Amino acid sequence: MKEFVEGSHAIAEIIKATAPGVISAYPITPQTHIVEDLAQMVANKELNSQFVNVESEHSAASVVLGGSATGVRVYTATSSQGLFYMQEVVFNIAGMRLPVVMTCANRAISAPINIWNDQQDSISLRDAGWFQIYAEDNQEVVDFHLIAYRLAEDKRVMLPVMVCMDGFILTHGMETVDIPEQEKVNKFLPAYKPLYKLDTAEPISMGLLADPDYYMETRFAIQETMKESVGYLSEISKEFNAVFGRDYQDLLVEEYQTKDAEKVIVAMGSVCGTIKEVVDEQRAKGKKVGLLRIITYRPFPYARVYEALKNVPKVAVLDKAVSLGAYAPIAVEMKAAFYGKKKGPKVVSSFVAGLGGRDITLESIHEVFRRLTVKEVNSDFIDLKPELLKEEYGE
Image 1 (cartoon, rainbow, N blue to C red):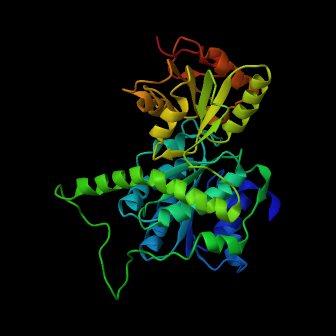
Image 2: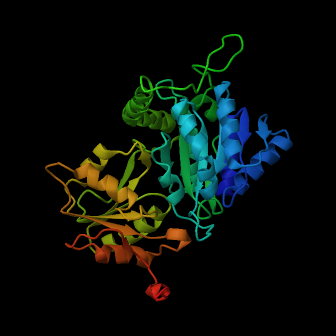
Image 3: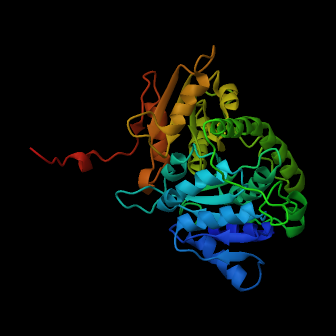
């Protein structure tokens, strides 16, 4: 049923439809509306879940770890410093192969304190062993949570999934969203039946010490599962399309006007809507430009990126995060995708924009295309204010 709703409320509605047994989260802007709505649903007996109030994000992650270990479907959400406070447990959840689903309302990292959007928080935890899927709009946010549970609970996978959405832009944005009917949700996402769980009738141990004879194999196993899951995403996407009529292809990337493009921007998240508008405008003027949207960032779709861009002369990578002292995060992956290959862009330039919530406007995207020349650049900041950099301290 289509509703004109806030993004956070749409998430709460779809999480209610997935019927998690345990929900735990600690409020943090801009994630708060999601868990406020879920808490209200539990209080109103619209949702038969245990909503566990906790004193911190570390505790919230620990609660959903414990809940998942006992064999029930779980859910949590966080943002920015909250995700960092969860970090220890986030790694534990992946290492214990628990199918936790989390919403990350992407927000900048302090200091200075900033509550607005960029993608530094989730990007910084890219090596934790979680799938990371980035939505462009709130319909995708809703759909990707259903897909996240199917993927996480797949017996071939058994790994956690983080659905990433741009804070405020999507969490507080109002859009018309098709909220899936419960009957269809039940058809696509059957009740969770764990492969293993903590059960006094059949006791097992989880999260044990692994000495050098065992630890490396646990990491290898996750790495192999990540590689194999690229194919599983495509399977699940087809099943999703069959039930709900929305086709996300292989769920790895979206190619937008790339086939004959001479210049392509690579990006992920809600900024891709703005880029599409500029691409359409430029195409109307005869300019051969396009967009490659990264949907799944972990595992990174190297082969799909290579196929999509191997004949494109110039590529601009637009990051909403930085790796200070190095190439920006997505730019690094793009370099790796073409390393040692016979074909590939002659220029792969890296641009950084939108940090701390600075607007990425149509003019910002035009500027990226203008700066995408034969001279390759690394971490070139867009919309920088030089006048703010003039103060000097010390002798």
